[in-house]
Length: 308
Image (cartoon, rainbow, N blue to C red; front, top):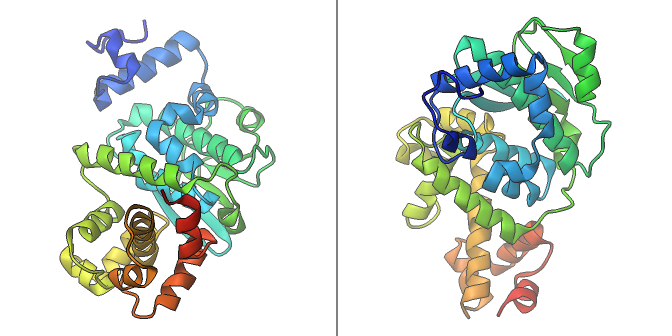
């Protein structure tokens, strides 16, 4: 039985019960024994659709670009698993997601890595319009349990073993590819729900979430140096932490200003000029250009189209 040796009831399978690492490892061991399938981790990740990832899946589906979706997936990965941490970096023209172990025990980590990498490949395909032939490379630190060709046949991408890190590598240009299901309102609401979930997790918030929380708490719009002071870290460290989440301070600040701008446009009758000053734009024309960059519409056109 799948839950044998875990002291868990079947409620655990519904997601209503938090499973600790030792219990999760036992479930993985049981699943591998019952299935006799060494590719189970990769196969399970491949078969997970976006609805299985709750608000995080919804937020990713509603993102503007693949890069935006990846940023959200990395930022809120802990709402889906506490066994591994995702980090982002660029190396030349390659964008890379690293998978690093958190609470996962050594015996279960290969399953978890294969599951996450497979899920990321599936997500990339889906967000890229269902395109099957994506130029991705998977790297794993492990020795394969079966013929490596079987991994490549299953996942449809190049798979390398006995590497220095566990990684998904894609060309940087793919980050700018638009997501056909993009919807700003849906993304904002789903991301807010993700942030609430993350805030309840024992391991705490990542730096991007901390930055966003501080922006909501303070008056005005702090500079990067001021935000670093508020978080009691150096500017360099803050930049590094945010880069690992595939984002930066200006992106988070712009995203926050965009949400505030939309709120004021749709839920107040304030003149556009006043909203511009609220958002720290001394020249309303600069606000207009920024808003058009965010939404491809002028503030007045946006209010006319979506306002009540």
